[in-house]
Image (tube, rainbow over all chains, first blue to last red; front, side):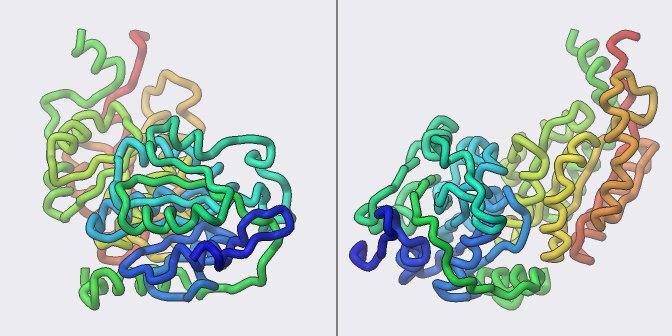
Length: 204
Length: 184
């Protein structure tokens, strides 16, 4: 439903609408939301046990997705994070490319700013090409997405395509209202484990 | 030549059995993901892990990636271990908050530099700070300074991590590994 993704003044996609589209009818998709706005975005789409919103660990979201994808090869894993968070752990793109997890997608919501700290510009504001870096690392399916009409194909690839997939999606920089997930991280970990493993998760 | 190189890189003596005992313990405890930045002291263990199709060996660009990866592994029900040298502990500091806050089992096996007959000045600051840094970030730290202590200490580290849900570490003393001398 690309028509449902609103755009801001500059024509860039609204981040909440995009995330809602990517997580719509998600089946068993597991989602990790990187520190800051992406964690609030996945929560706004529905705070479910299959979501792991991050309150910290900046730079770690993509690698968390790799560990989860390797542990659960029959499930789809989607990391949704920001440009600043991805830049802090950019080496993960090389590590993921070498491991070639077929069930892992990393989507960077690129607003070209550090949104939680006062909207300072990130390197993507100055031309740093994250999709190009991912492709050069060896992630063959690396996309730069600037138009909402490409969102449904991205969603299809996340749910059914051959990974690993990387997408840098240019999103509008306007802030969205805070939608906070639980802050107790032990709960966040336990509820996702139980959603995947059942009650046996707590007896492992 | 290879032996000379091994001595320079302070890999343990080929006759030493403790790397194989660590490998056995990883298998006994159901470890499935081995995250690492290589260290010469771990080279024999790394070779054993790479030869095992049931272990997923993930070479990292920096050690903090391993902390994040093993959190993801645990979310998905797999146990992992992080192998690194003491200098790599410094690269993990902030990411360790992930394991502390989520209460994630995170066993680390650290080969020590900078503490016993060290040749390289750059290894000393982080080598000396390694136990303090780990403990400051909530890690239970145990040391093995004799070859026969390595396996029991690693076993304790694995049990503490997976039974009590926290980061734990075994530090394998440089005395066990030998010192890199560059011939000096």
